[in-house]
Image 1 (cartoon, rainbow, N blue to C red):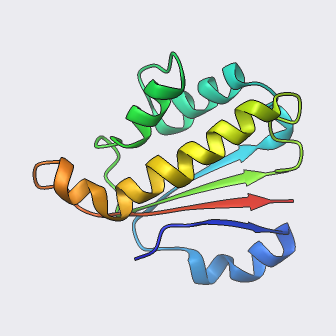
Image 2 (cartoon, rainbow, N blue to C red):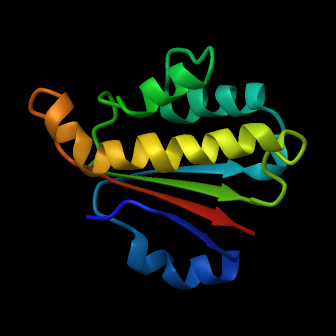
Image 3 (cartoon, helix red, strand yellow):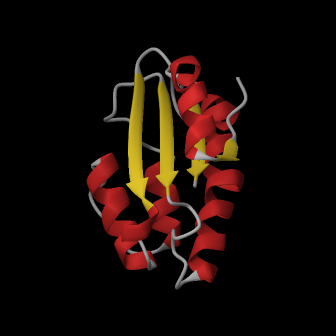
Length: 130
């Protein structure tokens, strides 16, 4: 299983949508037009993933590599209106996307097997949609 970040149009996504709907998949949809700074991003992640708190990038990464309370085999994060997502805070956008690609996706792809007792790999795909 290869976890990845894909950038595509909403039309392309709709064509793929039946194919990428995975069995037992936890899907989160974020409207990029409503997330314009890191505080709003943290609040959105806390709500959508039922995270107890996020007080910075380290805790965001820690919680996104836990998610043990979500009983799903796969995760899918769809960021709609990606060009508007964090457009007033490009540094946060860079950090968030880097966190996903360097920490979260690799963790669920294989690192969970060596860092969590009885850890299981999970699919985690991110769709950046415009």
